[in-house]
Length: 429
Ligand code: GLU
Image 1 (spheres, rainbow, N blue to C red):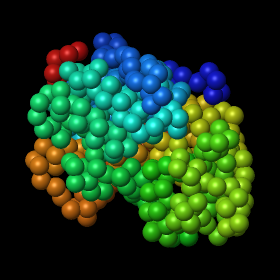
Image 2 (cartoon, protein in one colour):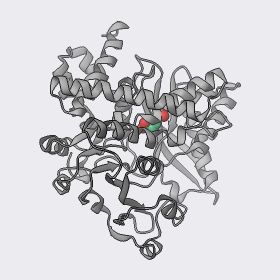
Image 3 (spheres, rainbow, N blue to C red):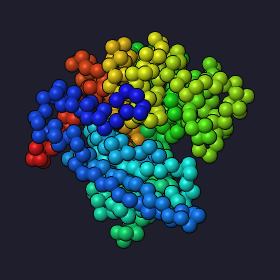
């Protein structure tokens, strides 16, 4: 589970689950039910490419649990996507919706593809093909997809359009993360990154640290990272380092500037894949370091906001003594081996399925608005989001303190207990 090559996120998700099942004393049938997905679909998506040739992509949808409500979770487009990754992410979605206490279950989808090498028309065909293969197994009352790594509001709209064409009606509650004005919710784009910072603000307050004047290092420069950096700056914090994937070099680089990075400035020098132009960055006074440097920075806060398996046995010891909080914006960024070290050092951890739950919480608000066909103002969405995130944070931190649990374990105890209880109440196990 430690090195990138052998890393299996589903094995990691199951190991985390097994530990908490023990702590909760779950019975054998409940353990069996919850350590595997309820249902999974794996299918071919044939696409006619722009050059007239045909290619067949592999698509997945995994519904881990729907005892608390319809399955919920994003769809990733990634060249390294695998059924096991989607299984892990679906399981984490069940815990995520439970920890913030929204009436939804956990699911996840994916397609093995690299959007960097696909035209928009080809991506549209993949979206429509994905929906055609599972149109009878997803829907507003069954399983509600959303964006994730390398999918956007546009992808969601194509998927909605295909679903509505197949079912012959308007079903805006089928999918979330839609464009504003076409069933989307104001605040959804920023919700995940903002949610990370709402919990970070609460954590700093709990630790008696004034947010103003704190520093952070962030891994990732996608939607979650950018909005986290933006809100962190508004709290008076300074992001001094950001690591970003470089498509041309197929590796990532860290960009550091002691006076702080300027989000707009960096946004202004990104290519169409979101990668930062290194020469322009240097001209603007950034030091360009290797991709792993983000974790070694002398900062107060680390925010991994890229992919899974980024803090592991190989690099956890490089975390500087100055780091007080790790806020996980990505799903599954920390392996159990690294977790043990973070816990030993007493770093305050905001676990992924709590810290990044802002996205799905806002998706829930979007679904509510879509089903009512009545849309709220941005302030109202963000106010409700902040309230939900803070309540979830407080529930977890109070349990962690009273039972002397690591924050990840406390979040797991709350979430797994809620899902297990729903399964029992329904008479499933
Ligand atoms: N993909 C996001 C996540 O991992 C959002 C899921 C959703 O909105 O359903 O939480």
